[in-house]
Length: 330
Image 1 (cartoon, helix red, strand yellow):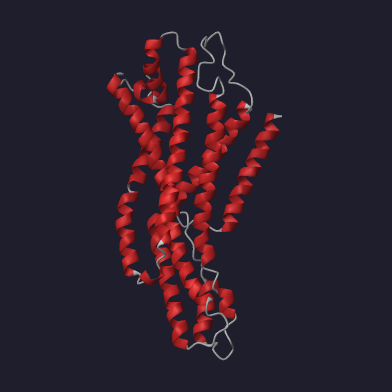
Image 2: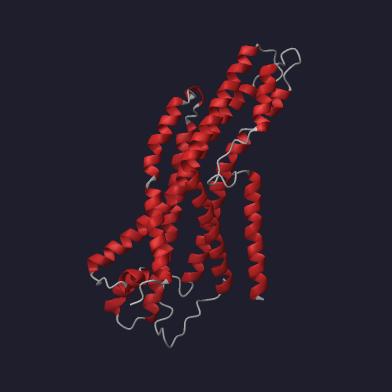
């Protein structure tokens, strides 16, 4: 029996990652305390909850479909090469989680149910990490946007120093709130971005390798039932195409939502430059220095700031990777 194998390392890493993401529930308690202490309740946007729920439903729905297609693909492989219909379910379970049975765990029907359930739950937990980042980004962005609205609505007006001091202090509280959230979730953000980049590149590799538009190259001698799947031999092509589209869309959603925090922190500057000379003073100067002199953004374990420029860099990296693959495939 081979204890250490590629399958074993892959599934153990998945289990450890799933356990890590289960800690997200404990993060909410800390984050809610930060919200209560921020004194920014007047800037809360009631639409954030709806947006967060909508994102949750959409991402989980697509994740379930993507997982279902992967199981359909695996089942088709088993049925194509199976000579005994009574053993299809057993082979399907073993193929779905081979490392577990390589360790000597005996197969039973109950074990099969447990393995498939655990696999599905791991997929949902993995998707929850991205939903978590999107919801946090939506909340932080909404607070900054509400402050920006108050500043923009007073563009060019003569206002007392106390008014600008209040807005600057509120902005300062909002930036501290962003840092508090970032300290709590920057490790999750880092893993989310790294995993998204890895799986996008991986699915691109499989997509180019299998040449979409052709049926699976399965030897009919070894697999006499081919094609027996739901998509008449196109199961892998359908799964890889949908999975790539889903991972790309999810990656862009997470990246763009998180980058909005940084973008929202810069919106107020033009309106502050339009303050009349008679009202311009130390408070306005301090406000502008704070906006331009400090980077307000979520980070990936403090290694990088999530900005629109970073998103473009990641997209450029993926395009470069695809071009290299195309050259090797020629």
